[in-house]
Image (tube, rainbow, N blue to C red; front, top):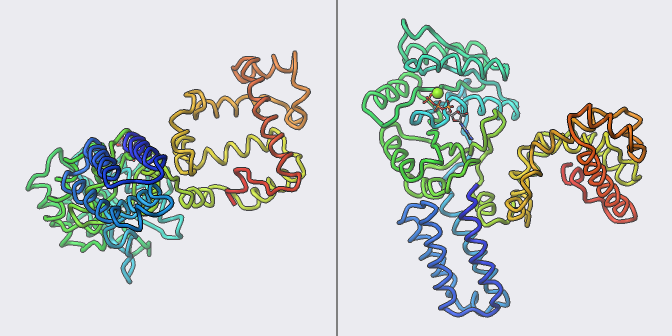
Length: 443
Ligand SMILES: Nc1nc2c(ncn2[C@@H]2O[C@H](COP(=O)(O)OP(=O)(O)OP(=O)(O)O)[C@@H](O)[C@H]2O)c(=O)[nH]1
Ligand SMILES: [Mg+2]
């Protein structure tokens, strides 16, 4: 996410911080580089210009330049101003006082509406809220079955009607009535998209709005489409008055400009970001945390939340006990790897750890999700006894495990070395110091 921009900004600020005392000229130069980087990341030029002007005004004050750490003070100001441009009112969903709260998703074709509908149902369920999904895209033949498949996968009911005999307004009215009957907290409406904004689509969305008065109208914006996305957002907002934005596909190689400008340009807050195709790849949006990630400062709060969602607390406690007693075996190693995997891809996790953001880009490509799969396969091919006594794994045992897991003796040696290193680290922790392993962080 924001890889290029993040690299450039950290480069600029590292150079600035290494200078010690700063002059007006240093600040000027650094900020014109910042402006250029923002423009290259496709940030709206007015947003970039105002941002830099604001940072400059605050940085040139005597208390910054004469402080002991002027470079760091500038970074702090940049962080605050980045947070400011990403802030746009309430970033959480506001449910209605009566059930169901109606949420409508709108957006251009392929922006991610249907996927986001399913992701939202899952996200809301984690907060104890139930949902009904309403299939209101009657134009694309496969749209209804796409939503039904996702609903089945997540065990969420989908309301649909025969597109040949129903209108969109009929479907949403009956869908909301069904949600009321079921007593679900939310009714999530998936609407159809178009390649470009046209009157027909807007007319349809306006009809839906007046038929069921949604409490939330969220525009799903494809982050990869840059400034076009920002223009589309403005038009959607004028026609159907949005209450929030979902920036989808931020996991891809989006330059990030749309996400950084859209709130400033439209005044509409981002409420969620899509970080992948999987139903659990949706994160609530927090302007300050996003600013931290852009500046490669990590995002420990999101990491902890993900861990809390995915790691069982008792399991974490048990792991800590094993850390302390140094009885951590290959089964535990596998469990720990699996817990991490549930939280997302490794590079996404690394980005959230302060100081590791840059490292995630330098990681050898083999240290990726495929490698985790290989480790799983190897450990699963061992007998329980071998998992407790890895030192026995030599010669014929090693050959058998390699055959069973479709790997080589070399892969197995590599895994055993990694495991031994982890074990060594743990022995050090258990000698008095607090264990600071991953599982500890996950509690
Ligand atoms: N990598 C990534 N892919 C995504 C994300 N969100 C959606 N997609 C993918 O984008 C494609 C389009 O998603 P849909 O949810 O079908 O988009 P839509 O807006 O409903 O499309 P239409 O109904 O045709 O207008 C699918 O292949 C999704 O898997 C995301 O956050 N990250
Ligand atoms: Mg769709």
